[in-house]
Image (cartoon, rainbow, N blue to C red; front, side):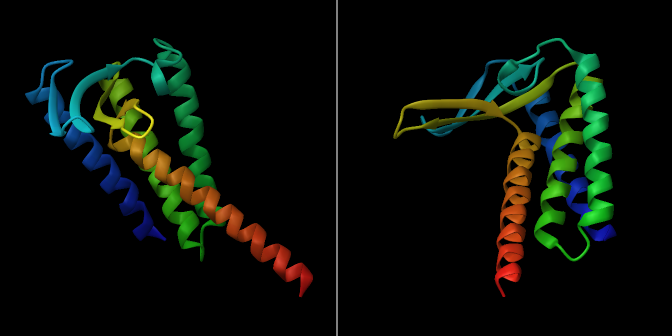
Amino acid sequence: MLIYYSIAVIVILLDQLTKWAVVSSMEIRERIPLIDPYLSLLSHRNRGAAWGMLEGQMWLFAIVTVAVIAGIVYFFQKEAKGRPLFAWGLMLLLGGAIGNFIDRMVRGEVVDFVSVLIPVINYDFPIFNVADAALTIGVILVILHLLLEEKKDKKAKVD
């Protein structure tokens, strides 16, 4: 099970390395087009949660993040053995939570830098970072695991 923790460590390292690169080489609001106009690097800072909600509530983020990290570790230790999809999801959540927590505690803000424009609906998706992507993928994997477990339980009851 210890090998799964390396997933969280890789997420944290990749997150912090990319944020360091943005902070050290780009001015705030500087944009570098990658696939113009759909994908670009955009140096941005966020003092709140997703989409800037609860801006400046650092004490709240600290308490919630510590509780979330404890919950993730607890569920990983108690429930993830033999459930690789669940384990991956939890470790992506752990890495993402810690990555953004480091920013909040060290910088007082989260460094975001991936800007995506969705052309079909002309939607400028909120700017995000590696930790945010890991959190999103982790939630998807946990939900998928739960749905598959529910389906397996229903099938077992029928058989």
